[in-house]
Amino acid sequence: MSPLRTAFLIAVCCLALFAGTDAAPAAFSGTPGRIVFTSRIDGSGELITTNIDGTGQTNITNNGVFDGDPAWSPDGARIAFQSDMAGGTNVWVMNADGSGQTNLTNAPELNTDPSWSPDGAKIAFETDRDGNAEIYVMNADGTDQTNITNAAASDGNPAWSPDGSRIAFASARSGTFEIYTVDPAGDDLTRLTDNAVFDGQPAWSPDGSMLAFVSTRDGGDSIYAMDADGSDVTRLTEFDGYDSQPSWSPDGTRIVFNRSSDTVEEDVYMMNADGSDLTVLIAGPDDDFSADWQPLATPPGDADCSGTVNSVDALKDLRHVAGLLPDPSCINVGNVDCDFDMDSVDSLFILRYVAQLPVNLPQNCPEIGS
Image (tube, rainbow, N blue to C red; front, side):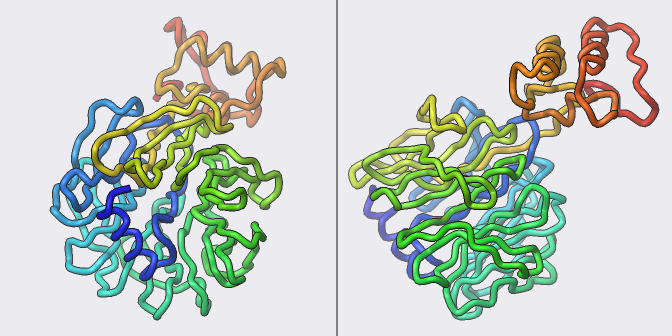
């Protein structure tokens, strides 16, 4: 890890919880779009978007100051992020192409780790404006900034659940950092982990059934997954270094995360949701980290979240009906006849659409592929 990155992490640790443990934004269901990440290409930190194979990289900030912690909005049209543009560290928002950059928090204290609500109306974030790190919630235009944790200990890494009912976060209120959830008003505090080590950086799966997180329970910084109630913990990565900041793909099949060591710069890796098929996504001479995946709208009938409707979607529907594979990640759009049950009739409608034959769906059902 470079001396510059080390110095930055120490500074963040002193100000806002712990080094390099920014929260992973919420994962929203949809077709996987582009990935945004932070890169030290100019020595400070800029935001770059890329295709999911690492090609087509585009620098979208170019501000000459640190820009980081990017979080796609649920519709994939905007990015919330932290920036030092105004002199202090604030939460900003911009369009997907980097235009329209707007300061939302406008505060002299540290404001970071934005996480959108699933309806795009609110943003949770971390701030030390009350003397220690707390979780705040604000409207998406920056108004009505409200402390929802109000604890003597540090709270950070907010992650809004896909159904909007819970906000997961890390807190040191027990003496070590553990993962908790609260409702968006700050009530109904629930503890999910209980260890004498660090647990943090919670990241919801798109269906809300699981949380990926970082823990040192086995000696190193590794990525784990657990059920939403804290049960059934599974270790996903094993590495003699530091794995951090997990973020799910919108279809729930893959996870991107950071990997570094004392001798290797920080790079962005990708793996299947079960920890298999580990690959390097972004690797270069500079630190690359804080990746988040753009959710794109999934057209009705696209049962495999590929972005298009074809015969594969009909086959996936039929295999689901026969019990030959789990529910497809886009099951809601696989059910095209609006009867709340994906069955062989949906497959027939999809095949007729692919063959360009008339498709007479029930009234008020959206058109297949629209």
